[in-house]
Length: 434
Image (tube, rainbow, N blue to C red; front, side, top):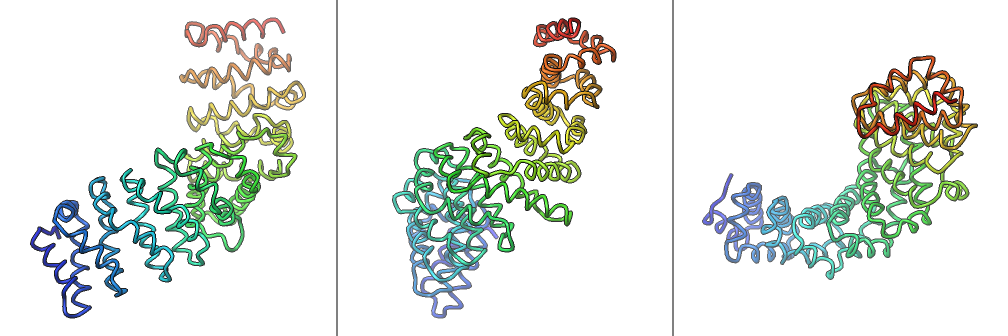
């Protein structure tokens, strides 16, 4: 129900001056329901004294009134209008203070409200930072209540996504106890909670993407924790189809992919943070699961495989020794994006030299490449040409097989395409002179 000025004033007066607590509580419930409507929210924030009265009820010594007042603020925090969020500024210091309270329900509500306000208004963020939002959130992460932890993950993820986060927020987060506790909450085992893990995996993703200090996360065991979580997810999808783990898979895969860019794979391997064969096997289990259940996640898994194989001969060896080239090739028809990533991974393997190309050839790769050369997407064709060039360089027999299977005729289709002319010509010459 949309409320007008008179009705808002009536409910606020009853909530403030009612003779019975139940009557006061009912008035706030009615106001809260009205505040679910944008029209009522606008009327409320422009009504003189309305926010002051609500904050007064939030800070009262009656728990039920406090809770209902907080629920009213929570409804206001859902608004996409920054003016509504800024009207809530007088309440933010109290919401922060209540994070150290004893009621898990009340703390959860305060966290979700703060998370909503953070994302909608820079003015709110400017006020919350000096008020100590990062230390307040860091204190909450040791809560034994899963609902509080999930709400905390939500609020923190909102804070980490704002435009000023890399300069103003993430350094403070990295300087707190939050990173080690985030990694603790992502450790696989019976205590792992999916809802909590999803929220904090996204938090970790935003921290890593900022590139403020990813070596700190690696030193805290970030790669090994995420690698073990990857193994755990692969085991879970093998045991049951309905795991909900696709929600966790996306941020975990992104975290691993981006962390891997921070260190050479030889160094990472030396630290034993990732075990080659187990990680590759787990990733392929997940890729097969995505193919059947969530194809949109295939690029995420393939991007990780790309980063694993880019600088690491050992991961490329694992790919070959476990006979995973053919399952990789089966992903080519899914989409152009998937095709490009599959071909990039194969280029990573071929770049490692003759011994690796000998393992790629012979096999189904040639017929697949002749197929991708016929794709209408120029990027797919370009990546196919790059892979063929590497194969011809390190495995001359591949060029002979290519000629025997009418490969040159396929190449001729692309001679007139400006972006590909030089590469097509170079590949034709290489093939003819092997």
